[in-house]
Length: 105
Image (tube, rainbow, N blue to C red; front, side, top):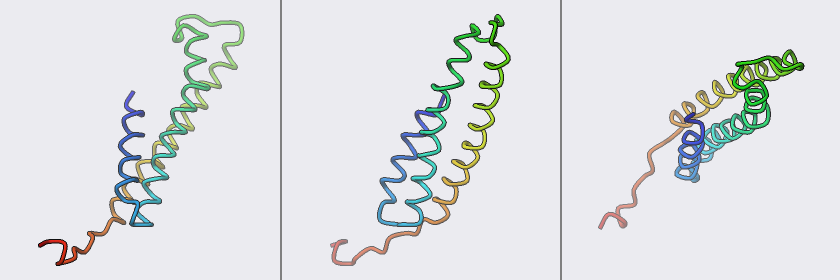
């Protein structure tokens, strides 16, 4: 799972863009999406996987677990799309910083 890496990289992007308000906000939104995705995975998806032995057997409450598993994947898919769009918007909103000639010397 690459979500922790995506969370760290988007957080780094937000930090680097902290002086460009619009690009920064998009990068923060992408970071928050990945944080939510991880939270959803560990609160709903992972417990359903554990309760079913990674779907190798069906416990008594398997229908509820299946709904929980499917819903968590659906929400994470939407969050993933929003994160991708936000990171792309952040890159498109980025503007090169003007360099002060006095700093170059």
